[in-house]
Image 1 (cartoon, one colour):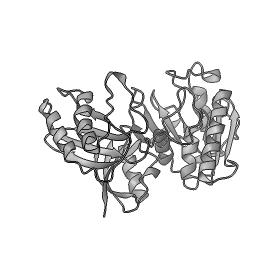
Image 2: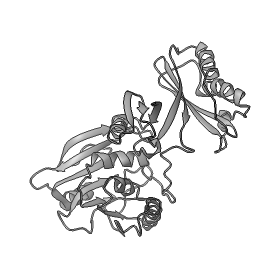
Image 3: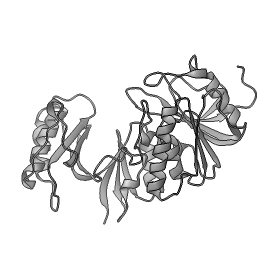
Image 4: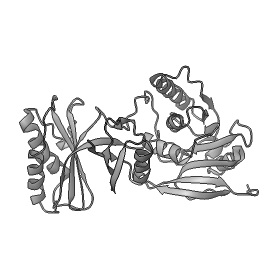
Length: 349
């Protein structure tokens, strides 16, 4: 018997989530919507292993005919009332809602209409999010999404969203969203890569996500900020301990300027990088004026057949050919995950 499941994702990487589901044999993909991949989960599959997904949910109801008028609230409440809640227990119910486009009702009205009906037969309190209220962490977590005239009512499978990685014991400003880092690693085709480098590693998220796809690779992370390296080291240690890998020997961390990477030329198979772009973390050192020195160093250290996967905001850097581009929505901006290969010839400085 298959279970209807939904993977939530950063907008733009939904196709990568669908690919991960197929390659991992977690299920059969049935549809892709805004920030969602709908699929039939394989029997016994552990859906919490998805790395490119923000969250994974079990669908409880799909409701058609959801219009823009307020009558939709009544229709959603009736659908929630019909949900089979057999076997569910908890200390309370919380609901998070979202929709695409304009509606004549708010997310809070959706949440309250559905949440009250889910909580009533369970004889549990419903915790509203109105006025900035934060439901208790132990509450049963439901989600309602609406796109077009179709709504989904679903229950979170895990006790917290998948993007909240257990290894993230330490953080810094501007740290990369883990599923986006996992998407970058997936686009990097890491199979067989001997050395993977992140010259602006921050809290280590990108390389930790890369380890899941290239457990035998040498993973090198550098950053201008010693505090970032301390966070990266702590996170890598937590990840290797959780995975049962002793000592974190695959990782190597060091303080260095992104414009002067302490690695021999042509010695790196893959570069994964989220350059500082001035919103949360200002560029420093040799990158303070522009990112040109970073891209020249990336070209220098990459092997002839190497690839760089970069989260770019200002176009493709000089000296690289674009192989693939995935535009994402992130922190209110729309950067591109760019898969780059070195162009032949010298690049003027």
